[in-house]
Image (tube, rainbow, N blue to C red; front, side, top):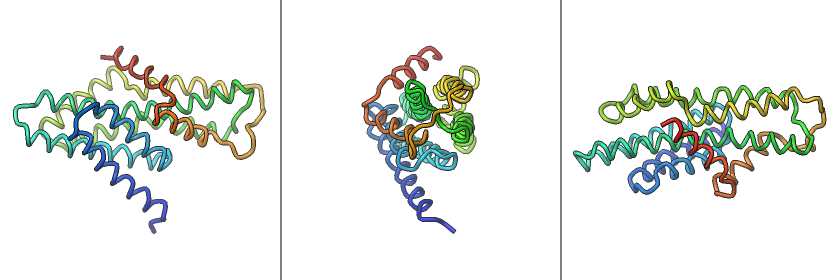
Length: 229
């Protein structure tokens, strides 16, 4: 049976695909637009594995629909279309990287205050983080396989590049897991105040990132991406 939360999530995810499609059609800074739309969806729907899979799929659906409509209207603009698709997919990669980065900031904040999250929560967070890049890569591969023409070719090229050079989210995950591992082996057993969880702190930081209050993670991701190109 579909729960109210599931129904709400499905509705939001369907809206996300529409919003990403509009972002592609309107041009502008497509990467930033897709990244922010994805971050807002993650903040609203949570970042459990199932939700993230739905969000990634919706983003790719929106990219595909928007790109195909633009290619139909503007024949001979293949290079421009390829660039728009690439920027949009980078937006999804960057959003996932910022999710991992928000977890890192939450962990660092706890460490700076000599506090520590529970072992169970740290273990679950590590498992979720280790799945994050796979969600991005699997969604990219699945969409590329199902699509045709220029859209499929562009995604296949991006997939190959990511397999050889890595992704923004993969790079950020390594940094975050290093901090998390330090928390897990810390001698201190002090806990955060009752009711304060890693997921909640991450969500709060993610909101600040999506609204531009925190920009450092974005800058680091841009630097990593430039180094990989």
